[in-house]
Amino acid sequence: MAFKKEEIISGLKAGIIPLFSHDDPTLAQEVLEAVYRGGVRVFEFTNRKQNSFEVFKHLLAVSRKLPGMMLGVGTIMDSATTIKFIQAGADFIISPVLKTDMAQVCFDHHTLWIPGCATLTEIVTAKEAGAEVIKVFPGSVLGPGFVSSIMPVVPGLQLMITGGVEPTKESLSAWFKSGAMCVGLGSQLITKEILEKKDWGRLQRKVEESLALVQQLKS
Image (cartoon, rainbow, N blue to C red; front, side):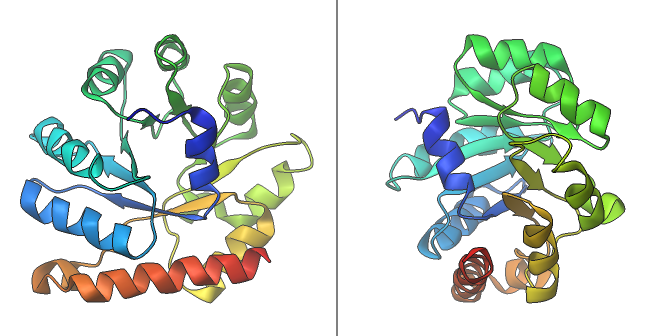
């Protein structure tokens, strides 16, 4: 099932996007299923391992059996890799950098493109190139103050923050008060300890708690 851009953006507005990469397809599947049980409907599998494409295809087959689960791929750096993952079935493409040739590829394939930006100039360039959602990265360097400063300058921005975000009230509150639409959570959510112990119940609870906290902050 292919999801429309509007459906994915609506899913992003839930506020929490898990970011995960692993070379073991079975473990990656267990993570995906645990966060789904916790209420996540948008998941980014990051393209960082030698066999990431094969693991992604496995996860995609799994995701299609989870109603409403939207699976995208992150750490995409060029248009050739963009095409490869879109043809495999990726619901959206996320990049840590801004490359407008990737925008054209995604536009041609009716796929949501989320480029990474770290300056106001990059954000405006991405918006002019058609980006409906923009990734602010690295959040740990830029900080919530950067977001709150640029929001009045470029009205209507829909920003996803990644890098340095923690699933705590203090961290999430700072980002959502600054104007973030959603945040990406990697190892702060899917911790090394959870993976080592394969404590999927704990992961599910952390997701449930994080989503509830975001809803509380947004309301």
